[in-house]
Length: 432
Image (tube, rainbow, N blue to C red; front, top):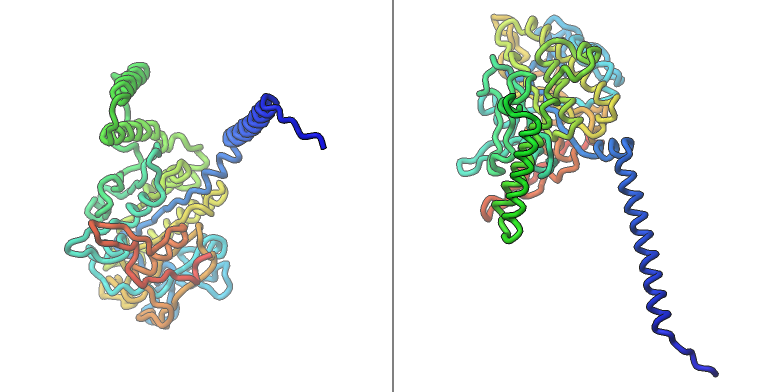
């Protein structure tokens, strides 16, 4: 048998041809991916995969009886009727007819919230943190956690924006980044305008601004060539982030929105801030809180809710429709939350007082079983008779809906701190 004669040069040439072909295929595949990433359709799809949160904070304590858990016909039920929602057998107050039509399409109602805390300050903090602070630990609020979990280090938009009314006062616009640090604190805004000091000074031209950036980059790169510096890297990241935030100024400018869309939301400050919230989450902001004050109806509860619940009905319905039409609602969780509810008993001033024993919150959109209802209060609304939950369970449910492990541990020193108290379980009945 004739022995096989090897030709090393031929083998080398073959290997080169193979590697060249493989490299060409890899390059072609890479170019295909790069070209696909330039596609607006795919870019939008990738953007939608990022989870976002809009918190509608009903500051002062909205009445569950005039919103999501009415008790018509009871001595303490008040003058408003209950109306049927789009979910058979589920009724809400007649002040919310637009939301009633959308419950089955968008929203889960959690009735029977019992936190046992009727004090404005400590209750509001608990409903922002999901638990109570400890003497030696300051926990981060919901917005700070979402900013930490869903934000991106190289993002050119804020991680956490909080709107509140100037008359409400920042004292009620609770936010704390706690042990996560200031990096995840809120950007506070009282109106729908751009944040202060974000805009480039008028005396600095676009050319000057760009040339300053180029010079800073040149000096920074030259300095970095011979050094490894965490401080320099942090400085460059911070500078890049500030420039990104400056570029995001138009997100806060409602003149960028078509007039029909602005008209659809309405002229109130709450409406305008909710429209900006949609603009922000669409641009990639992980967490936006919009506060609506004056739900603290110790007197004239029914007139107060006639105004505020009617506004909430219109603005929240418009926001949910807008997010749905833009393909964003599957990736955006919209929450209504207060520090507590209002008493079934009507006081001498025709008002309802603080009540923490049986009240309601809602979750809409991302990760939620829409049209579901969890919990039940008794006929008068005095106590929870089925499905009692507290702040911890609500927060665990929010995290679960967003794909965040609610028992994930952060560490302060050597101490592990889970996102929710040990043993807490999410409310499975309202999760998709």
